Length: 326
Image (cartoon, rainbow, N blue to C red):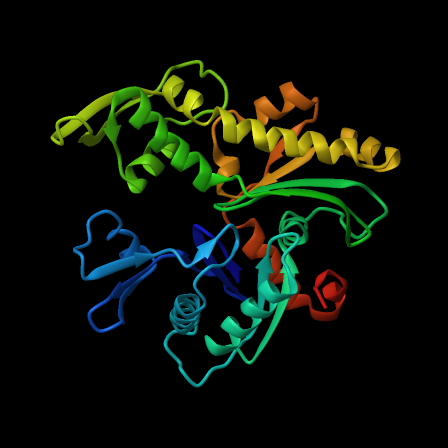
């Protein structure tokens, strides 16, 4: 299970990805009852009445609301098991680099209370390496960049272990929030989270594009309170997300600076593999190459790389035991 800040995915051995839903829960506060989980709950963002609270229980890759996360995991496992409540599956969950023992324990307990009989953990960069079929178990330097919803992680991997890593709490969510702030400051216009995310995915780019993109953005005039629309361009989005992108680039530079020479030489030859939803930003590979000199390679399906890698670890058992956390 890729228990992400923005989306959660479940991989079942022999079946592949069986669930891919937003990590969002809608709760009726009058009776403390969950009324929607996943895609349906995300539609409530910015549209729900006061009696309905829309919760994103994961923050920066870790559990921020334990009870809600437990219920969300339970719902996702039940869907993945096709509603067969008697099945208590083994579960491997991805966690960000540098999670504390308390945070690890919270994930394990949430998984067990959510319906799993046994819960193991794997760090996300290792799951990326497995999912992308990198030769991570050889004495060879492999560098991965995983840009999720809450965290961006750069790791150098060799011999089934992380030789060096950098983790920052700047990723897709920070870009979305930066777009909201930009429209507020530049256009005196308030836009919702879903609209900002749509702008990022539709016209967002890290470098100037051969053919400029634009779209109509709908929101509310902060001065008059009336509905308003603005024609936004890819240039507006690049300006909005410049700081989050610079922070990610700096993490890549820091990882390179702290990598031993032999592994750095391997990385120079092999390049940097990008995964996670944030890696889909247009031109990000070009920006990384321009700023670091590294060849940046986008995984074939970056949204599912972590989940695919975690599933393969579960399928192959002892062959990948070294990748799991104690």
